[in-house]
Structures are given as C-alpha cells and as structure tokens.
Amino acid sequence: MSSALSAPRETVPIRFAIAHGPMWVSGVVATRYTPATAPHPGVLAVAANATLLPVVAQYRVTNHPDPQNEVSVAMNPRNGRNLVASANDYRGYPGLPGDGWCGVYSTQNGGTTWLEQVVPRNGPLTQVTVSGDPSVAFDADGNAYITCLGFSRTLNDNVLAVTKSTDGGRTWGTAVLVEGTTPNVFHDKPYMAADTTSGVTRNNVYVTWTRFISGPGECGNYAAPIYFSRSIDGGLTFSTPTEISSAGYRCSQASQPAIGPSGEVYVSWVNGARSVVVKSTDGGSTWSAKMTIPMNSPPEIYGGAPRTPHFPAIAVNPVNGPMGNRVHLVWADDRFGTADILMSTSSDGGLTWGFPVRVNDVATNAQFFPWVAASATGKVFVSFYDQRDDPNARLLTVYVAASVDFGATFQPNRRASEQFDPGNWFIGDYNGMTASADFAYPVWTDLRNGGNEEVYMAGPAMLGGGLPRMYNAGP
Ligand SMILES: [Ca+2]
Ligand SMILES: [Ca+2]
Ligand SMILES: [Ca+2]
Image (cartoon, rainbow, N blue to C red; front, side, top):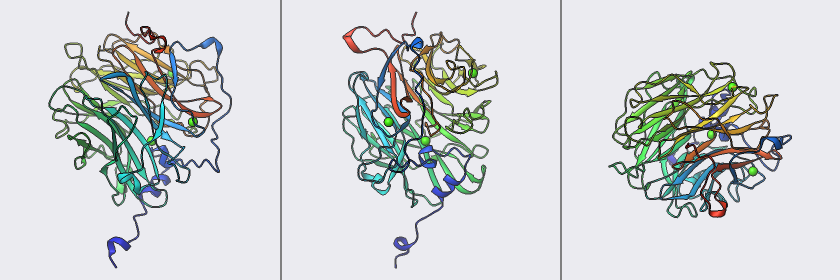
C-alpha cells in the first residue's frame, strides 16, 4: 500500500502540547470546552457597581451562550465605522461536535450593531475540526483578513490559514494555507498585521506564530521558535515560513507583528523573563539582531484558574518626525509591587528602550492583559484588565490609559467597562485594541452576563450623529 496514505498520522504534537502543563500553548488547544457536557463553569456573581459607571460607550459584540475569548480587533483605514473583531468562539462550527472555532464579527456603524459569524470551514480548514487563536487586520484598501489556527483533537492535522473579506467583514472567502501539518510540530498562536502605508510594502500581510517542536530543545523536552510568513499578493499566497528567532531565543511564545510608518515590520514575543523585538525594513526578507527588554512577570494572578500568562504587546507610533516613529511595548510587571502595566518606548527603532513608565494610575491590586495601539495623530492608548475597584482583588474592570506625549506620561485612566468576576475557566490569554485618530477601541472578554463570556468593545459613542467625545485623549 502507499505508505503515504496508510501510514498512521503523526500523533505527537497535540498530545505533547496538552501534556506540558505550564507551557503557554494556546488555551483553545489546552482547554477543551464541550457545551453538551460541560456547562461553562465561569461564575458567579456579576458585581456591577452603580457608583462606578463607565465613562465611555460600551458595545456588546457577541450574544451567544457559549464562551468567546482572546479577542482582536481592527479598523478599516478607509471607513472608521467599519471594524472587524475576532475571538475563540466555542459555539463551534455548525455540524461539528462542540468545540472552538474562529469567530469573526463585523460592524458597519462603529460598533452599534454587529454581524456574528464563524470563519467558513473551507480550503485547508476542512482538514480540521477545531480552530482558534484568530486575529484580524485591514490592509490599506480596506480588505479585511483573519488568521486562524486549525487542528484536530484526535489526529494531528494542524494548519495555519488566512481568510480574506473584500466587503468589510460581511462575507469571507476561501482560506489560504500559511503552514500545514508538520511532523512533531504544533503551530500555535498566529498573529497578523497588514501594511497600510503608501510605500513599496503597502498591502503586505504578515503572520507570525510559535512552532512547538517536540524533542530536546531550549524548553527542555521541546523547543518553541517564532516563525514568519508574508503575502505580497493580497492574501492569495503566503511565503515559505522562515524562523525569526534564533539560538538562545527558541523557547518563546506570543509573537505579534506591528507596522511602522515606513512599512517597517516589528515583531515582539516573550522569551522567559524578557520581551524580544526584531525589526525588518524590507518587508520581512531580512531581520535585525534581537533587541530585548527585561520583564518582571508577576505570578499567576488567580493561581492558575483562570490562567493569566503575561504576554507583551507592541505598537509603532505612525507619526513620523522627531517625536514620532516610536515603538511602544507594554507588559504586566510586578517590580513595583503588585502587577502593574508598564510601557517602554524606543525612539531609535528598537535599538534602545527607555525606562518603563507605569501606565495604570492606581497601583492597587493587579493589572494585566495589556494591549497598546497608537493613533494616526500620535496618541498612545493602553488597555488592560484591572482589579483596582475590588478590595478583594478578584473582580475585573477594563481601563484605558492615554498618552499625548508619545508615551512619556499617561493621562488619568478611563474606566471602560462594568465590573465582573472572571470566573475560573479560560478567559483567553490576552485582549486587543485598535485606535482611530483620537479614540481607543479596546475589546475584551467580559463576564458581566451571568458568567457567560462575551466580547465587548468600548469606543466613542456613535449614536445620535454627534461628534464623538468619549475617550478623546486630547486636551
Ligand atoms: Ca490562544
Ligand atoms: Ca458568549
Ligand atoms: Ca498593581
């Protein structure tokens, strides 16, 4: 018989990924959710406090009894009322046994109403029965992209794919393969960015991810380098993946690409007690030396349930000029006591990094799951989960901080959500945010609805047709 057809499928990667408890393989992989037999155990009591009303408009993105978590969001550069968000969505794919699938949500009216969908199971995604870890991006022409990790619980089919929408997220095309099933490898946590500049790399689409490789390596009995692929043809094809880590950096996770004003590609990730940043000025053909930023990562905020890995996030200030073109990195850090959000800024393209600034203006209790976005006018926004409003250091609120001096200082933080209990299940490993010229649009996993995880977004109030005033970081 044909050995290619009859050979048993590779059975290592998923199992080793799940077996290595402390390793930050994606939660959608490590944490199986089966709606029929395991009702969402997240909790408890919703502790909305009437005296702590949010100061911004909140938009409910999803409305489904199964969980949604690990949210990303992008804004159409040609239409600021068109946003696309994504999440691990445990409603799953229609007709498949209950499990996760990549959820994708679009709005045409600034968040007032959302179309909730899951990514079509076509192209390489037909090989898999579970998917997750989506992230989204818009290119300069307003095409939307979503990258999605697919796998099987019982076989080792494992694909990374990208799906494109040319109508603002209303409909999605056929998934295109970035990386397919590879023996002894589990492709994990893709993240994407698209180039919206006017240079030669305009409309390039970039994907970075972790390869968990079983066998002796820098993590002990496995390795975890960071890989990169790009599309220069509008998502029709993706380049052969290349490693952007190297020896000494191959026990890594949580990569994120970000684009600078001249099309520079930065990628950040976590490697032990440090963040690593690399830069490419040729669209990802060649890469700089590793630039590292030390982190004092706090211990698990809730003792592991829900788990709270501490991943960095990166943004490049799109404003060119003496104060612009700065690179901002945020992460959770407990060097000053309890977990805080710190931001370090580089003004020389990542070669050197400034002393970290504490972003949260109240240090009480833990702040974690930061995200950073820089606006077209140079404002820097940071969003994060925050326990400051709960004396018992359990309930969470989303806060946003804004800087109008390119990250030197932050204005008083703005509360962006109700207060809720995070429960004890998987709430994702991170949240997301995007920004318009003057406003932040954080997205997050929210459990105010009786412990049912939903995606929420905050932003300027779009109702009534008036000038948005919420979140304005200006004077
Ligand atoms: Ca994940
Ligand atoms: Ca839900
Ligand atoms: Ca703190």
